[in-house]
Image 1 (spheres, rainbow, N blue to C red):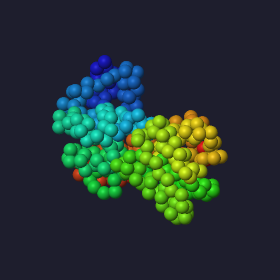
Image 2 (cartoon, one colour):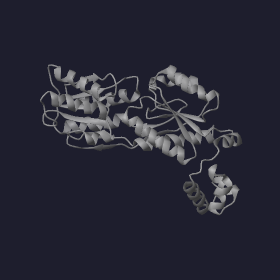
Image 3 (cartoon, one colour):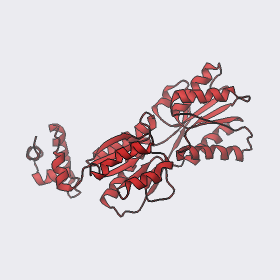
Image 4 (cartoon, rainbow, N blue to C red):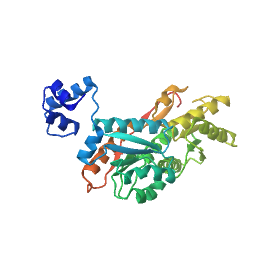
Length: 326
């Protein structure tokens, strides 16, 4: 199917079809709709190589994800892909594991002009190294919020969110609130722990217990919860920094013959589908995962089109969802 046939199907000129394919804002809405409908009906795939030669762009975005197995990361990537495709771009996915050598391999695509920009979800502690590798290329840091520097970023206020969780638990009469955290090289882990400890201090709650999970998995959450249960003083509430860790905590509590929430309340973080599927369903902080991904693409495309655009730092809203685990 050629661009000429698409033009005939839509009843418009070849130039109009070309402008639609190149995301020009000079096309009338009704003509754009007719062209897009014709493309959909014909299952048309534009000649990407010709488009790249014509525009000196690859229309590809490199997305470097810290852990694609993390349901939160997967949801963010869905938002990235949806927004990218809406704007005529495709994504290349690199599961970096926040490893600088794996990141270096992925970033080699920059030198060959294989991608037009990068979205990263790597640990905040790696940003300086990444900045040295990325140089002046368009770049957005997603989900890990940077307070300063040249990289634009989008995320949520992790301190406020964790303070809200711990305050809710304290208001419900919980006196021994524990935290299951992850790798402190990630800024979100440090910020959520800061919020947790600040509420304990403000409420004069003497009990404080933090277990660090080896990875963001249910098995690691279960192991962390088992360690908390083995301590001389048992918690009566647990706040986990991800839903996967919280799901593992639920399992460990059940295997210990204890009840949720009667003996121990449990709260997760991220608002993934998993939170509603476990038993009992998890209370959790819901992040706008897909919207974070979409906003990251919006910031990146602005940087691609306007290289001198100022750095932007966007804070998205979060919501607390209360379920049977509390």
